[in-house]
Image (tube, rainbow, N blue to C red; front, top):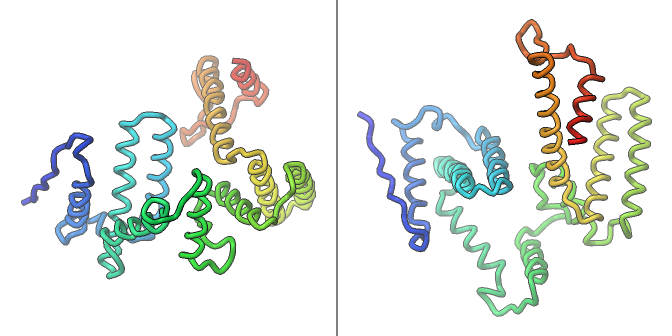
Length: 279
């Protein structure tokens, strides 16, 4: 017989103080129990890695959409991943969900001495500087770039690495030097294209992208946001191309496997693209 699970009713916003966190922990424990969910019981910290990133990205999408109801749902999905990982760690004898929450509480108190201690700050910039100084002491970093997570999206990681190096003066004096570096790296990419070496092309393409990220930092632009907006623009314009293809041809040409494929001329498709740009 399935065992029921009681979920507390909704509380008014001014009465909410995290009371339901324990419910999520208990629910996760139930799912991982011997008579729980077979799929959940098969998961590991490594197998859940992709879901943590996926849910974090969906939270960002919800923020960008401005839909607060959607954001509430996506934050719940992200919270599930946190509790799921903590419960798996408990089974391994490493730590539990309360250790996670206590740890971040201790960190917040430690990094806000201007709130919980006698440190005086003058504005938010001083808060950021104090935070970084305290963080550096906590982490006992072996090198300046330690602490920049390798799993960050590549553009954001490159931005943080170059910004961290700039803190000690390893940087161009202004955006002109950074822009010149982009031209230099593009020339080296052209040379790699001539060789046809996949390894060389990958190496030089990475250098071009890193130089562009550095230029974006000098211009005080977020490369991740810039690329995201361009991707959104591409989606919008390609939707027009697809609509025109369906209007003129019924749909995309199909291959033997039934999947959309080539068959329409690039000139025709580019014409529809230019229409989208004009619109």
